[in-house]
Amino acid sequence: MTEWWRGGVIYQVYPRSFQDSNGDGVGDLPGIIRRLDHIAGLGVDCIWLSPITQSPQDDMGYDVSDYREVDRLFGSLQDFDSLVAQAHARGLKVIMDQVVSHTSDQHPWFAESRLNRTNAKADWYVWADPLPDGSPPNNWPAVFGGRAWEWNPTRGQYYLHNFLASQPDLNFHNPDVQQAVLDIMRFWLERGIDGFRLDTVNYYFHDKKLRSNPPNKLKNEHLAYAVNPYDMQEHRHSKSQPENLAFLKRVRALLNEFPGATAVGEVGDSHKSVQLMAEYTSGGDTLHMCYGFDFLGPQFTAAHFRKCIEQFFKTGPDGWPCWSFSNHDVPRHVTRWAPFSRSAGDLARQTAALVLSLKGSVCLYQGEELGLPETDLLFEELTDPRGIRFWPEDKGRDGCRTPMPWDEGRAPNGFTTGKPWLPVKPAQSALNVAGQNADANSTLAFYRTILAWRKTHPVLQTGDITFYKTAEPILAFRRGKGEDAMLCVFNLSADIHTVSVGGVPSGAELEPISANAALARDAMKLGANGYAFLRLPPGKKPRVSFKG
Image (cartoon, rainbow, N blue to C red; front, side, top):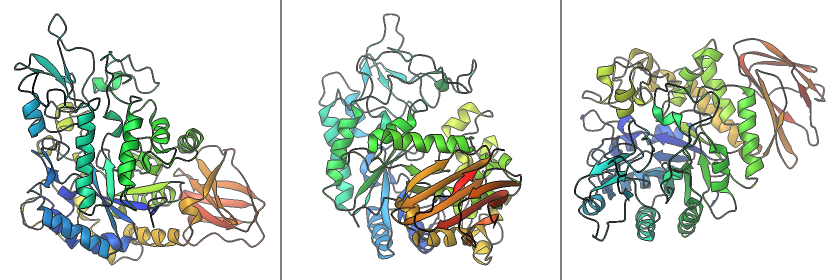
């Protein structure tokens, strides 16, 4: 199927933390191969591998020094080939991170570019002269703190780095850079990869005039003294430029040469995330899917979910989103949304039911199927440069990156025979895979059940979505495709609520996958974090109301 991705479920593997095979405390490709049956057993369609290419690991692999080589920390190209082959044998697709908005400063391209202003790669990165007073050319900040400009005395210029100073940005205004990036993608596609997750896909181009960014005026974001000054700007000129669309069409044209190959882009832009997601996936000649950070933050309201999804399909009716609630960049959602629940297990199951019933594709992050909470780490245990810089107000991303607990007993629960690169704490250790495998009522068992159930209802994969305007905390929508339709209702709170449901046939029963829910005539009672699925007869469009 060339459109396996449409409504498909992608499982994100963070290789460092999945399974170590050689006792060095860091997960690797042979370790992932060892655990492929776990992934396949969930019922997902695809694996997304976070960076495995050669890197000095300043940003845990998101700083690439050789795009065509596997980092020895994770194994070899032969291990990669074996992983892809064995995943394919289990019916799993494999996509990999492509981090091409920037490289490592140890990449040969940058080593040459920084030498002088006349070499063959002099214009492969974003270089700019200083202002008369010696300061950087504009006010752009870096995501990880400080200015986005680093001085190079050899060239007598600054270079742009949207992230760490050791991650210089490539100059996508240069056609040679675009072609080099496409050649890298072709290398992996010819090796058998099924596509890519494109890191920071809206960062590829910058404003050629290098104009300064204006202040951030979005409510609830701009703070007089923000933890990170990056949040105090609207990044109008440093990313999300209109030239990006033409390059993404070149990426799609390349992917079209490989039947079934797909790409999902990561959009990081708080001002117009949903708009860019729709723009980057519309028309059939751009990316297949995009995700943003709209559902990766603290907001857990019916209005927020409804607004984002409706806005996406209004902006790009033929576009396609990929929704996720957790990944390697944000605190795990069971912890983020804990204030809206009484039970972490109930919340874990409800959020799985929710993300798997929205219109779009789905990305699940490793450990999500175990209901893992965020790990509470000490400062001396941190490795993430963001957390180290902004501690303790921003503890960084290590808390969601701690190793998978596989076996029962003491930490590190079978992840490694050595000392793990990040610790496995008691809260995560207790939720190990082996223990949950033995419990028919575990979160892991539920994930397997609902993923299998979803496959029997194609309407939840590709059907249209229509929302009911209910008061908080009730989110209700109808998924419809031809004669097939499903009513989906969620209580996004720890309180009990009753929802009015009219026009439902007498004797209608909720789908068994529903939880903390009961239907009696025209009343649907939802307990804490309750959710209900009701399969509808052809032509039936029930009336759903909740006034709070």
